[in-house]
Image 1 (tube, rainbow, N blue to C red):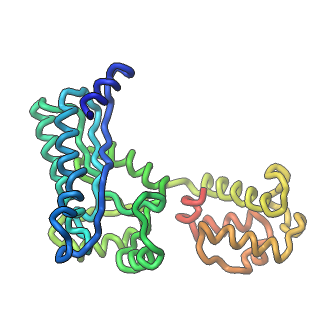
Image 2: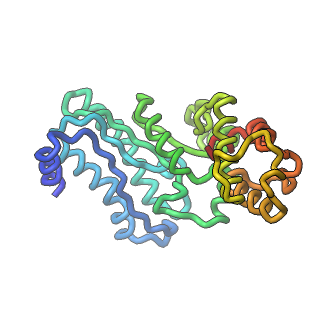
Image 3: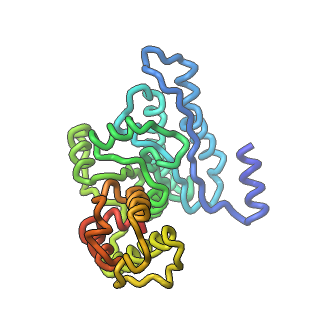
Length: 283
């Protein structure tokens, strides 16, 4: 079936440029209670599936062969002995396939990306578990925008295995140093792109205008950054609405923010100065 699919793509488009293997199955259970059948079923897509896909595409002139692995393959996870094993296999297979590339038996650099949980992905966790991860590891679920950016960074890194995490860099590094002392840990940078302050201010101000426009039903073009907010007729109910909207991106902010900073210009300057990372994610 895979061979037929590859042939049909070649006929329609000329060639297959790259392959992304992102199949996976989970059957969470402690290993003492896990059946042989469950274990084999979880290994299937990432072990047999990967090996068969690689063999079927061995004649393709690929630019890349990307494997979607998981941080569980490196750090483990209670109840996921089989899933961790399957992902560790993918990481090792990336190195193996690259030796075949060097030997001219394959084409296209192999990369295994050890992903965390995606916020909008298929495998979800409850809020309590996410809170625990944030407290213990400094990790948050990966935002889609951050994940796409990370994918491009991983592809351009020249590495064959990359682990991706989003959250508080110092806390994550401390956790990894403690949990995996035998590996070399390099400096971890926040996934948000570095923007210059002026550009970040402009974008933040524009978003604030759009936010105010939603609440007051005014067009963005009619809202001036230097005008007192009271000119736009905002009242305590509107301020409550604005606070609630900002909380989605900034967390708990001061409830008196719109009283302390009475123009959008002043508010934008405050947010960029005190909440730069949150501003980057928001805009």
